[in-house]
Length: 244
Image 1 (cartoon, rainbow, N blue to C red):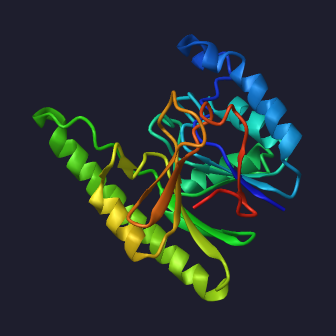
Image 2: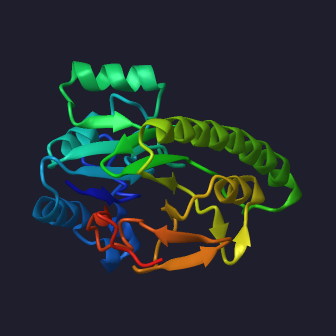
């Protein structure tokens, strides 16, 4: 049983959304079919795939039904996280109820929390961008980073509790936004990760790069797992395969 990652699928299978990423060029051509084909080739029913954000272009949970159904029909269990484009995202209770009502039995959600899967404890939050440094956006960014910092603290606390009952499991951090980019860290996130002893962190959001796009900062290996960087192929993280 394996654990895979794949962020930023940007699904748009419903005619109501009609926002295909194919407008961004050949890199995205036929991406939904490519994702489906590669996923079905790799993932077994007992495996788990975590999707760290930007799942669907839908604006509401009802609009997201076709995209969520698309994922549900793929092999394996799926854990969904929130990205900056997931406007359909609602409360955990509403999303869980929606999945139950629509027989989406392989989907669950991870939001500033932690879950034990195989030999890992998976934890994390969306994070936030360090961009938009002009005065107009700086205050909003500081507020959002502070909020996400609190959510990360909650996630790491949940992971610490799970570690008590899963002492042999490695805690792995997952974000949508990179906690470090261009050599510049966001201390609100990186200091917490380092203090918690995290050694591996995975993120999405960044497009146009290839895998392996990996770097080390503060003793933590950060790896990009955006779908286009992966060639729309789920990225195996357990059993542990990527170099540190």
